[in-house]
Each structure stands twice: as structure tokens, then as C-alpha cells.
Image 1 (cartoon, rainbow, N blue to C red):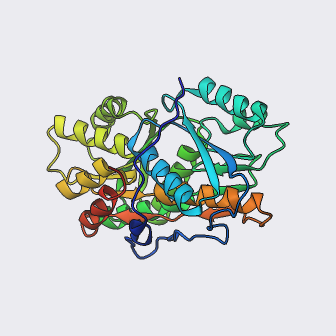
Image 2 (cartoon, one colour):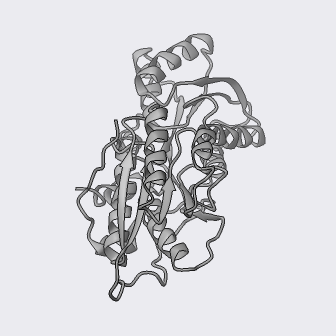
Length: 330
């Protein structure tokens, strides 16, 4: 179920410009090379592992591109990248993490957990540095990724401004109980409460676009006066948009907000199919993940949280952002 994938390396010239699009109110994380960014002078390279939620999606391809660029830039590290067949391959990810830790060949490991509590159990007796990427968990000494609640709050603020006080909103989350999805729900909820908007329903879609179509169809029938839908993934937002169109309600001005900022989501903003998306910086996550593992192996102290930033993508900045995304992977 797991496989190691290698992606085309990205030109180092792109590093300085990656994910530079900004919107007032959003944090931004720069891609910086640490003191570890010089090739090792003799001796073996550091052997490290990264286990992602999956390697078979656009979002994670950006993470892997960042990992490979850092590996090339630093020159003193070799990275074993693995990922699950999909976002619900819980057992497969657990088995892979356990195999890596038991093999004893990796000096450090970074994990994007599908189930944070289960990953923590597998790592109870691990004696190597453990980092979290994209999604945090207890055993990780450093979390590299997005402040998901704060990022969703930024997207929610934008939506609240569009629909005004008293607006009726549905939230379409991903997997119930999954920490990243729940953090995004919390951020959206806070923004709606502050904006005086009413959350009429919270539904779960497992992060699957086709399931989102079905869920959104039911929401539209139950709440005919809906003003906006806040989604915890771009695929979910695209599914919600399809449902709105199938119901013949695409001209009613229902605001649709996505999350992740993958190219299909950004293109949908350009095309007017959705209103906005909250973009993470997966390339920078991958890059900083490798830099951080090398840093800790060379005795440097890491911050508990390395924020790789977010941007709210709207019609005003979507084309610029899409151009940057398209430059990242071949």
C-alpha cells in the first residue's frame, strides 16, 4: 500500500519566490536555509525518513518537491519519502512508521499522521528525533506546518465580510475527529461567531469531492436560504460547487470557501466556481522539514512550532498564485 515516490527536482531559482502571494491579515512563512545548508565535508550523509499522509495527491506532490529541493540544497542528507495509498489508509501508515523505527537506519523521522493518537502509540519507544509535518501529534518535538485554526479563521473572516451579519453558513468538514479538520472547523466557527453569522449545519465528507456533492445536495434542500459554505478541503469545495450548479442555484451568490490552495481550487476561484480558498504552503513545509531534521541532528535547538504560513486566495490574487503553483512541479 505504500510506495516511495521521487519527483522532478525544482530549480533552485524558484525557492526565493515560492508561495510569496500575501493578503493582509495572513501570516507568511519564508523558506530559509539554515546553517545546516552546506554539503557535508566528507563522511556519510544523514539518513532521515518522511512519512506523509499519501504520495498520490497534488497537495503532497508540493511537499515532496520541497523535500527534494532541500535535499539537493543541503547536500548532506538523504531522505526516504513514503506515503499511504490514501487518506484513510490508517493501518498502512502505522505499519510503515513502525517498520522505519524498528529498522534503526533512520537518524530522524518526520510524520504527517493520519491518526495522531495511533501514531503516538507506535512511537512510544522510539529513540530518534521525531518531527510532525502538516498535522501535529504528542510525541513530536517540533511541528512544521500551518496553524490550521488561525488559517481557517482568516478564510472565515473573508467570507463573513462577503455575506454580512446574519448570514447563514454551512460547514463541510473532512474526517470526523481528525485533528486538522477539527482545527479548521474551530477557526471557521470563531470567524462566523465574530462576524455575527449563523452556522446552520456542520457535515462531514471524509474530504472526498463526490461525497461532498451528496452532502451539499442535502444541505441545499434543508436550508434554501443558505448564504455560504465553508469547506475544509478544496476537493470538498469543488464538490459543493458542483452540487450548487446541479441544483440550478449557481446564480444565487452562495459563497464557497475551500482550503489547501491546490491548483484546481485556485483555478476554480479564477473561473468563479468557488469564491476563495485558504492556501497552505506545502512546498515550504517539505523544505523546512528536511532543514529541521538536519538541524536537530547537528545539535541545534528547534522551535516547538515552525509556521510555514497561509494565504487567502481570492479573485484578486488567484492568477498570480496559480502561476507560482504551476512552477513548482513538472
